Image (cartoon, rainbow, N blue to C red):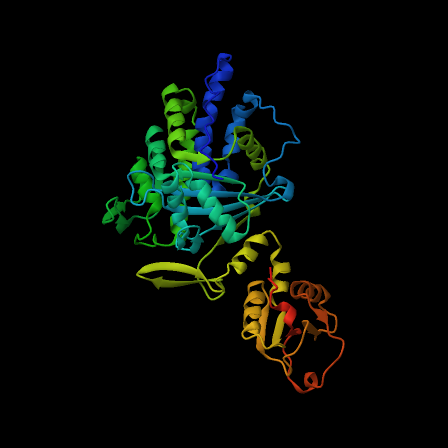
Length: 458
């Protein structure tokens, strides 16, 4: 069931003491500011002088006097993993207004104060219910076409299915609000490190235009700042994702400094305008008390504990790129998303432990007459991080239950037990003659039996 767009504003103008009413009136515009920075660069929240620190300086949350019980947990907190889907779209007036150009899965592990950010490429092809295989950035669009205001939830449902991770919260922001935010703040000042020109910058009518930026301090309005942050094809070394990310960090830092200036807080017109922008440009299922709890969590986080994972095609990646009917797509190599799911699931596992699991070498032999069973099993095990060194047929194809030969002499007992569980297999105690006559490279030799035919490896 789709979660409707939440309206935090019903109690905002109830009669209250003037001082308390003023701070409640400020709360939602500040949430709007925090969420904008949250979606375009989560690190800005947590590094340097963060939003949380700026807010605490003016005793903002303390003045609101939230009565949140310590026992009241955020969704996912009990499982020690809170997943947040951040979405950014063009909005009305842009080509494909509901296509999400920004898709970031943020995971928070409260016990360790660790954060992971998985950048999901918009060209990743995934199954969308009712529409077949489509680009993942279309999920929000189809949700909006079906029922206005439900696109973010629809996108969250697709990400949940693809990555096998429950999405506890979602936040969607559109670029139109980004522009209006900067304009309402009176523009921002940014030091441009490198002069550059981008002659392939997209226009709103699906064409191209040229944008240029001179080196030095620049006063930018909303549209100029957005162009500066989004440019992908600039010369002078500004076409890389690294350069683009650096520019975005500059823009967001400038917004933060401008937004939390004292003059913003004493301007009723600015606060009112920010409130309206929040209503028009932000969709989320976060409630006020949950935003407050995230604020308290953010104070304890260290930017050194942020793990960034960018999903892109490469030799070591589970994704590959292709062209289908003239469209550029990214597809999972195993077409099952299992390896992607494993990467996301284990993102907080120390790299040394994960590496040890990935170098387990396996030989697979089909001990049945089920055609293709060895190959399908090799794909499944490979997607789970094992290295398959050989596949083939066993001498006999009448095996009822799967057997495992341990070629490590008990040196990998943990890996052996994991394989036995996955394959519903038993450890072979005999040592057939063919083991002595072959050059064995594997840590384990698996002889597949009939019982594996209906077994799902996860």
